[in-house]
Image (cartoon, rainbow, N blue to C red; front, top):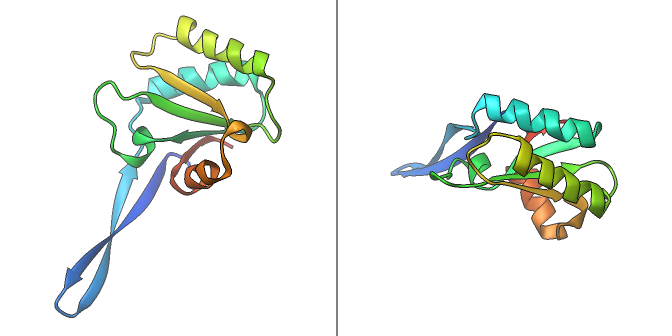
Length: 124
């Protein structure tokens, strides 16, 4: 994963085989929202990765799409801490879209693998 941006490979078929075109993909979250969200997360979870995934990471977000984030703190985050952080994000930040926050270790292995491949690391 690269912080802030990723690259997608698109295949284009031609008469003489397949060529690959590299298309730059940018996360679809305004920098000021990203900064506010990361500051709030840091106040609860000072260490660990914060990874953007889902439509805002893959470039397929539409108006109203939520911000999907997962935290990899190296170990499970207590349910109480995660619930309080979710509440603070919802009530204290002036972000016009829903923030869907999860603990990386609560997610199924297959989903973790998808996030590792397609996600964008906001903080490592």
